[in-house]
Length: 231
Image (cartoon, rainbow, N blue to C red):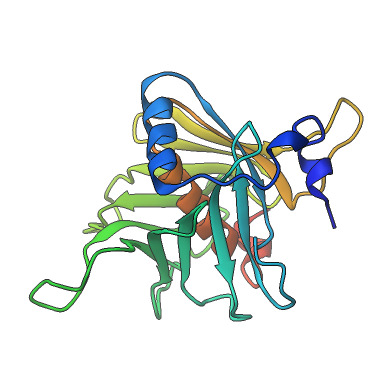
């Protein structure tokens, strides 16, 4: 188990700070306009009750920017990505009976107002194939809006590498890297466990959307799919 001093050994003065929804928007705008956003992802719920799991995400100042608090032991249960203050951003739900282990994202504040009583999808993410040996590198693919009409459609984003070992990249349809996941080091000799890792998001892409991708990756790369999906 890690303490905050191990995750942020040089920036303890920021511990306990969290960002409001307005501040998250400012950070998003800063990322889009100017420079990469350096995040530390801790695979642990901000609510330290026994039986919970989730994610706690800090910016480079050690401020809490995103969180996921999950009280269910069911790995297929839906999840809500929140900002640091606990405001819902995206609702992530598994697609029932999906042959490719698909998850869908919806805006948390959006009501079910369409003619069919459904919310519009922000994106759909699924594992690359049923037999994941075809190219040995693509973890998953993402379709924005969830409008995948056929298997041959080109995904909007692909995840390449190994999420289980925290060594993968998120690329857009043009092959450009928009985010990278890697192991986190305290210094040149101390490497933290894979429960704490780096997430670097390039300018021009919203951090909350990348974090939603990470949350779904954690679900689709967990057992019983690990031997096939996350070599």
